[in-house]
Image 1 (cartoon, rainbow, N blue to C red):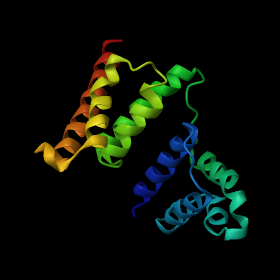
Image 2 (image 1 turned 90 degrees about the vertical axis):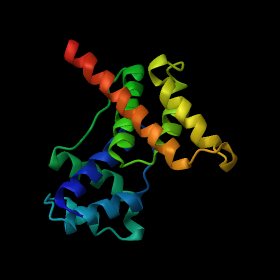
Image 3 (image 1 turned 180 degrees about the vertical axis):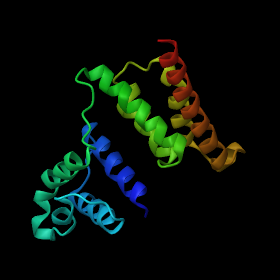
Amino acid sequence: MTRDDALKQLSDIARQRAFGRHVGSDRLIQAGLDALVAGVESPSLAMLAGLLRSEEPEAPELFDQVLEELGLLFHPPADPRAAKWAAAYWTASQIADGSLDPATGTHHIWSDIAYDLGYPEELEPLVHCAHNLAGWEESWGVALEELDREAVEAAKQFLSKQSAAEAGN
């Protein structure tokens, strides 16, 4: 793992936690260890990476300290709808860049984001992909990999519409 990979992993975990997804202390400690081995430097990083199983309850607070020291602390928008949209864009970016399995990502958008937003039209292609991936059967005559590619393309399209909207502002 490179230094950049380790920083991306820390940043991704920060967003997962900020968007309300549970990340176990063991994963926080492992991310700290990965970052330390990759050459990331932070005053609290060695303490996080060196936590024993009996010290796992300390991991979330130490992880936040490390994020703050590295300038990676993330706060989602205070408005709940804006936070859901931010989560949708972040999840779509992970699907698009290959760091999140398309079935997992589209399911998260469908069940945890689109539902809360009242199934907006902008998320329909991703929700459609989630339905297809969740219900896929070999008898459909389409490869699961093709459905994965469609989900990645839907995520890229969703993100390009956001970029176009931001460019128009």
